[in-house]
Length: 89
Image (tube, rainbow, N blue to C red; front, side, top):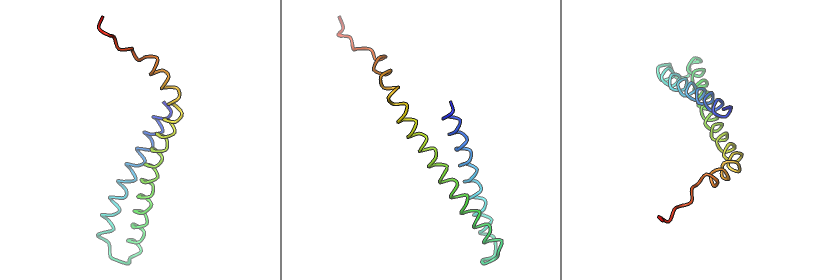
């Protein structure tokens, strides 16, 4: 439950960062080259790209760690719950 909640929050952060990146890029395209405003918007775009990338890495890390920690618990349960194939008799 905690893992899923964390992933959902990180997913929202990633989506928002990608939206900010997209909007900043469109705004920067319309601004005069070399202006302070364009430089600032481009910096915001870079930060948003960085946040989106880090958010994806965080989700990947959570998935890997959850798999490592849960696998020793889940595998024995899977083996216990598997039904042996019948021979048809």
